[in-house]
Amino acid sequence: MKKIIVTGGLGFIGSNLIELLLKKNFYIINIDKVNYSSNFYNTKNFEKSKNYQFIKLDINNKNLKNIFFKFKPVGIFNLAAETHVDRSIDDPKNFIHSNILGVYNLLESFKIYTKSNKSKLIHISTDEVFGDILKGRSNEMHPYKPSSPYAASKAASDHLVSSYIRTYGIPAIVTNCSNNYGPKQHPEKLIPKIIYNIFNNKNLPIYGKGLNSREWIYVQDHCEALIEVFLKGKVGEFYNIGSNQNMNNLEVTNEIIMNSKKLFKIGNKVKVIFVKDRPGHDTRYALNSNKIKNKLNWRPKINFKKGIQLTINWYLKNKSYYDSISKKDIMNRLGKR
Ligand SMILES: NC(=O)c1ccc[n+]([C@@H]2O[C@H](COP(=O)([O-])OP(=O)(O)OC[C@H]3O[C@@H](n4cnc5c(N)ncnc54)[C@H](O)[C@@H]3O)[C@@H](O)[C@H]2O)c1
Image (cartoon, rainbow, N blue to C red):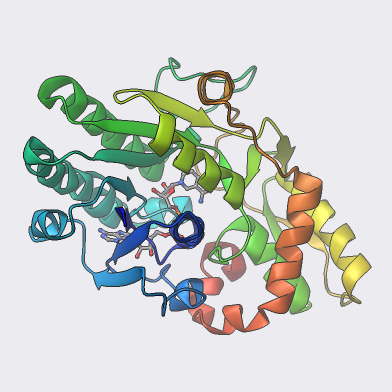
């Protein structure tokens, strides 16, 4: 059975990716340092699978390369990262640690490992590296202009990967994806936060005037794209992964309210309130994903209308998911206001 290492597999996208890879008959080793955004709830569906094992480890740990040599993975998906923009504004240090130094250690380990083993590294990154895209859509050649410490740390990691490809010839690919949503996302992020507040009859705090626009992709579509990139992608390339569907925060929130009303009676305190904007808040991100569509024949399958219904239904059926997260972490930033 072919082995794959997924880093950050206790988080939102990593755990959804592992679920899909297991269905495709890979043996998965999940490496995660277990931080506040990790959740064992996310892996409970498959934690007993004979094709899965979890190793608690920081990707900065020098033992990483020994794990590569021990398991001999044919692929490594790197999703380990600090991911919340607001936290990066409060304190960028952890972002430098995981997203830059961690990727450096991963690359060094991978460089040594691939001298004698065939493998492929897929480094998962974000559309935020391009900064504000006020008009049109950014393709893979668009210059990087990150606005937040989070985006800057991811940009640095992408450049590191790119330099290791060019200088040392490591077999790696970088993917830049737009905003994900779906099951198992930490409720410090917009969509699960809004759903949590609706469940709990709280108001819905939205930054600024709610006009910041993001390209929303259902997490499963992202994970399927990652697997296509692993199987068919060309080493040394970058691939954008997006849905082509932009919506602003207010539109997203209204769509969640409207769909929730169809499913249950919502409380009288549920209403949008506008709060002071995030510093350096980018107005719009939008990717041009023609390359992955044309070269790898990948297409997103789930539009926002369908995806948001699936998402609300998942949180409704998994209300105990929220209990597995500390109230302090749920209320971080947006909830404080
Ligand atoms: N969520 C999105 O909308 C989105 C969009 C595009 C790209 N991405 C990228 O996808 C990846 C996963 O994002 P997510 O939303 O699932 O994040 P998440 O915060 O839900 O999960 C991240 C996981 O990484 C682990 N981790 C952090 N630092 C680590 C380290 N040093 N060593 C080992 N494990 C570590 C955490 O413990 C956590 O379990 C990130 O690289 C992120 O930049 C996310």
